[in-house]
Every structure is written in C-alpha cells, then in structure tokens.
Amino acid sequence: MSLRSNNVTQGPERAPNRSLFYAMGYTKEELDRPLIGVVSAYSEIVPGHFHLDKLAQAVKAGVEMAGGTPILIPSIGVCDGIAMGHIGMKYSLASRELIADSVETMAMAHQLDGLVLIPNCDKIVPGMVMAAVRMDIPAIVCSGGPMLAGTYDGQSVSLSKMFEAVGAYKAGMIDDQKLCECEQGCCPGCGSCAGMYTANSMNCLCEAIGIALPGNGTVPAVSSKRTQLAKHAGMAVMELVKNNITARKIINQTSIENALACDMALGCSSNSVLHLLAIAKEAGVTLNLKLFNEMSARVPNLCHLAPAGPTHIEDLNAAGGVQAVLAELNKKSLIHTEALTVTGKTVGENIQGAHILDTGSIRPIENPYSETGGLQILWGNLAPDGCVVKRSAVAPEMLVHTGPARVYNSEEEAIAAIYGGSINPGDVVVIRYEGPKGGPGMREMLNPTSALAGMKLDKSVALITDGRFSGASRGASIGHVCPEAAAGGTIALVQEGDSITIDIPAASVTLNVSQAELERRKAAYKAPEPNITKGWLARYARAVSGANEGAVMK
Image 1 (cartoon, rainbow, N blue to C red):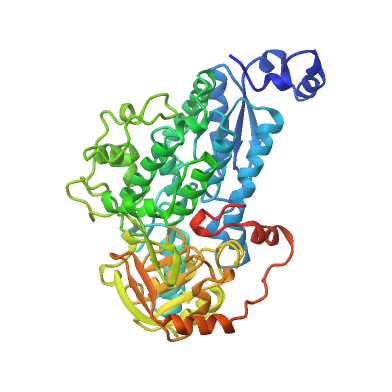
Image 2: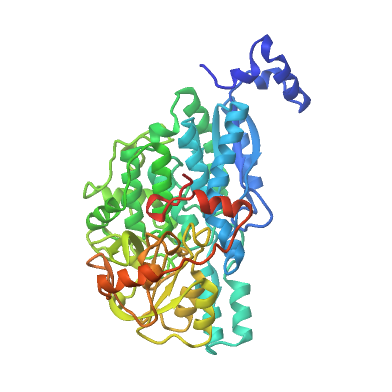
C-alpha cells in the first residue's frame, strides 16, 4: 500500500522529519503505519462540541484497532446560537471557509493518509467536508450527534422555542418566570440543537451523500451507540485508505443528487442550499439552483421535524433514521442506489432491511406531508438570481401573499421595529445589507423570525432578506436574495410601502414596481459605506461570491 505519509516518515532523507515525531513520543512502529488525522472541533464554548473529546478518543481507538496511527488535530467552530443577534453572527458563515482551509493546511502539511472528521454544528460540518473533497483523500465524517429535546410547558421543545419565547415575552404574552423556565428547560445537554436545524440537516445529509456511516445524522449525542459509531468510523477510515477510496469517489454528481432528495424528504434547513453548492464546487460537480426545484417537484416531504412540527431528531432516530427515509424514497426510485459510501458498500446495500418504525416521525411515501419537497427556490424581479424558502415550515395561508414592504437596512433595525410593535398583519419585512458581502457574513435572521412567531405573526407576516435563516426559523422566511443589496441587487431599491407578492407554489417573488421606476431609483441610488473595513471579515467581503454560488471564496 502506497502511503502519502511516506513523504514524512520513510527514507534517510526524512530522518529530520522522524526526529520531530520521536520528540512527541511516537515510535518507529507507529510511523510505519498509516497516519490518520482525527480532526476534532472540541471546545468548551459550543454545546454541540462540548463532548467531542470523548468521541475523538473513541475514533482513535477504532483507528488503532484497525492498524493505523491516529493523530489528534483541533478545529475551530462557532456556536450559531451564542453568536446570534450581534456582531458574532457575521463570523459564522465566514468560518466555514477558515475551517476548510485549516483542515487542508494540516492534512497537506503533514501528509496524512486519511481523515476522520469530527464536527457537529452548522458550518463545521460542511467546512470539513469541503476540505476532504478539495484534497480528494480518504475521509469519513463522524459527527457529535443531536441534543435530546428539552421540556417546557409539558411539551418536548428545542432551541427554536426559546427564541420564540423572547418574542412572546416582548409582546407581554409570558412573564419573567415563564421565560426563565424555557431557558432552563429547552437545551438539556450536549449535542447539536434537537430540531432539523442546520447542524442536524448537514449531519443527516452527510449520511445521505455517503461520507458518513449510517446513524451519523440521528443517533443522540449522549447514546452509547454514538461512541460505538465513532469507533467504527475509526475502523472504516482504515479500509478507505487500504482500498484508496477517496472523498471524490463518494461525493460526486450521483451522491449529491441523493443528498438533494433526502434534503427535500426531511425538510432540511435552507442553509443546506449554501452548503451543498459549496461542497459540489469543491467536488468539481456542477450544481445550480434549478436542480433544487427540479428535485423538489419530484420528491415528497416525509418529515415535519422542529421547527416545522413537534418531532425532534431523537424521534427521527427511533423511527429508523436517514436510512429508513432513503429506503422509503427508493420505493419510487428517487435515489441512486448504486452510489458508493464509506461503508465500502452502496446505498442500496446499506438500506437493505431499513424501514419506517414510527409513521408519526417519518410518513410513508404514499402519504407524505406534501408531494413537493421541503425547500423551494423562488425567482422574480426582486431576486433575478434566486432566493430560497423552507416551504415545509410555511403556514398554508402564507404560501401566496401580497403585502406592503417594511424596509430595514440591518437586522438590528428590523428587530427593534418588531419588538416595538411596529409590524402589522399583512406586512412584508425586508431586511437588506445582510448578504455575504454586505453583512458581511450573511447573518441568520433567527431573532426577527422567532420574534414574529412568538408574537403570533408568523401566519400573517412575511420576511425577505439577502441574509439567511437559521434552520430554527419558521414562517414565510425568504432568504439568500440574489443579487444582494451590496452587489447592486433590486432589494437595495425597495422603498417603504412598495407592494411585494410572494407565490411559493409558482416559485416567484415580485416587487410590484414598474421597470421604469426601478431604473429611476437605480440611477439615484448611492451605496452605503461598508460597515466592516478591517480584519478577516473585510477580506472575506472582498472575495466572497453570491449566495446563489454557495457564498464561497473566489
């Protein structure tokens, strides 16, 4: 077996390199084995990552059992919930690129033979996967697993309920005591937040795309099965190295289409659009927004997990998990069963025997929540290059809506208006200059959407932004408007009171203003000065692409 690590461990010319390994206590026997990077996002600031030190040890044990030498490498990671609602959220999406670059740096600089990637939360998962397919080396994802649901008012809840409770509090619907009860009860322990938010969406899609073992997306963080999964991931990467099964042999056009199908069936976060576009680009696969709608038209929505419904990831796991969903989709030939996975087997082989165990969490394909998928791409004069909505989390009465624009140039302006009671039923809240370039960093608008939901306005008020949404957002929340305001998009020209029509079934979003008037406004338009002019974010703003291309660095 030819090993990349021979470049740093073998031959007389590499005696200096070996001496540095010996300085850390490695033995010759360890250096003669495949060197496996165990890339862990463990930290004490992210609840989804708080336990990853234990999983990393389990992965290392698996690697050692299979005859490899595991080497622990750290990764950064942002907790989107803690970063929410302030300048910190500007760093979240941008961190994906830093993570991808840092994993590439460590793997290439030290010539590692394979990688076990241990992420869990929103940008860490796609960032690590982007690096793996960029380098095209053997790699497997072993995430930290979902948090268990919490309790509030006798119901199972997750983080989205906490953000909505703030809106209810601001509206005088609950008092200090109830707010405290919610904050003490909604997040009971470690893991990625319990709903089908971005972290769990991407962990499930890693399983669907084949880069993670069955169970990766749904086995709870606190379960012993998660530790067992980690050990098996360590063993599996050794087989990948032995057989030279690299990341691009797994992630390709076929497997990305499987991920898209699973995305629609599960009702994943709208952020999955950004991340799948970015992963596809690194894998050399052509993927555009039209394919999302084509897939949505074919694939029914089988799950209404929080925030779309009352069930959580632990319920999805008990119902059969991602493999049961894939098996259900296969009944109508909606997935490519020949796609290779990190098990060394195909998708078809993996799903043999998989089936739904609880139709309350996964509906049979003959009785879906809807015949169309959970996500929808919209186009129109307001978004010539597209925008996205999590259709499965939109109330039926808001699928088609026309209302007056309430225009705000930042999240802070919008949330002040919402908390101040300035938003009325029927309004269309427009939040701009929050795109990848204009934010910079494309902040999540979870606070505004949750405030609207908490005030019981989610079934009468729409929100449109060139920013993005948390997977915890629900309602007619339309994000990723392209081109963004900072790039001269039409959204920069919207004025207070303009009529906007949203027609999700027709995949359209329209600013009801004549072209002549828009040209007049464009001629008079003066772009605001950038709000960040130094540091990493300023460099990011200069180099980042539009959301329709995945908001990747050019």
